[in-house]
Every structure is written in C-alpha cells, then in structure tokens.
Amino acid sequence: MQIRTTAELRALYAQPVERVRLKELRALDRHCRAFIARSPFVVLATCDERHHLDASPRGGAPGFVQVTDDGALLLADSPGNNRLDSLQNIIATGRVGLLFLIPGFDETLRVNGDAILSTAAADIGRCTTDRRVPKVVIRVAVTAAYLHCAKAFMRSKLWDETAKVERTTLPTIGQMLAEQTGLDIVPETREEMVRRYAADL
Image (cartoon, rainbow, N blue to C red; front, side):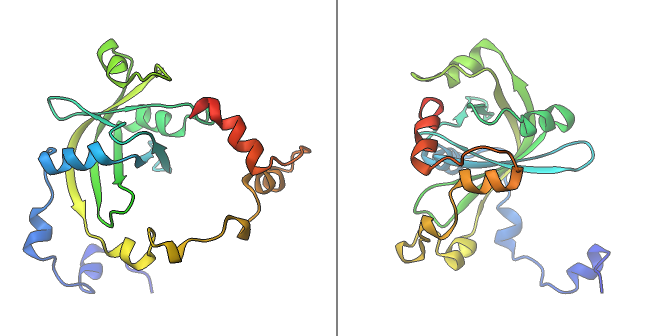
C-alpha cells in the first residue's frame, strides 16, 4: 500500500511537540551564527525546474561560509569536477537547503533559503582567501533555520572511533571510477589522488 495524502501520513505519527514547532526561525540568531562559524562542512541541496535533486558536500576551514551583517550566507564555489550541478540548479530554481556539521557535534543546523550566484566585488572579496579568489559566490537569503536533534548521529555513531570503517574495505575511488566509467585508464592510487587534489584544496 502506498501513502498518497498528508492526512494518511499524519495518521501514522503523533503531532510534533511545541518546542519542535517553535524552533524554526526566519533568520539566523546568535546560536545559528555561532554554529556556522565553527562548521568546516556543509551539504548543499538543490534541485532543477523538473525537481531533479542534488546534494553536494562543501568544505573549508571553520567559518568558510560567511554570514553578512544582514544575515545572508556567502558560500564560495571552490574548484570541483566542473559538472556545475548545484550552480545550474540555483540558476534554474533559486532555492537551496544547507546542512551544517561540526566534527564531534551530534546536532546539526538546517538552513533553507533563496539563492543567487554572485560575482559582486564585495561578495568575492569577503570569500577570498590566501589560496584562492572564487569565480562565483553562492549568496543565500535565509528563509528558515533550525537546529536539528542529535538522534541520527547518535544512532550512526558517526564520530565514535569504534564505528570507523577501514578504508581498505572498499576499492580506491580511482578503481571504482575506472570500473564504473569503463574508460581504459590506469586507476589512481589514493596517494596519487591526494597529490592531484593538493593544488585545489
């Protein structure tokens, strides 16, 4: 049986408690800003006009996502694979979802907003580092923000040393891509990949 209506869905669950209903903010408060300032990793979710979805990991030094005085977010587009999935989706729909993580924290911060691709000198300057001047900055006008509970991370034990999986349990990314693409190339070792990536980190 397939659930087809929100009424059918809601019948299976209790109503959210008051704290859960009230925690969604329309702008970043001091706690959200402090969380973002400590976060070195965010998942950027986007979709195109046909609702094809994409979730892209983004990382940098803690605070690499900047918060402007008026509460907008600035996320520099760092070098990647040049598919531009997220950027093209932003052009198509102007909407993003962000999930901020802090190593060792079981809580996360979810932020939704309206996004544009900015090349404004002020935005580029704000996101420029010693290593890089970004070509494009994703500017997000926040429409919703809330701290997400710790249950998923507690269940997964993501930060627990005992839960770590040895990298050798899967082939290297080079080996997997060589098989997936069918290209006649010698698969990279992990050491070769790290050396190749070094210039773009």
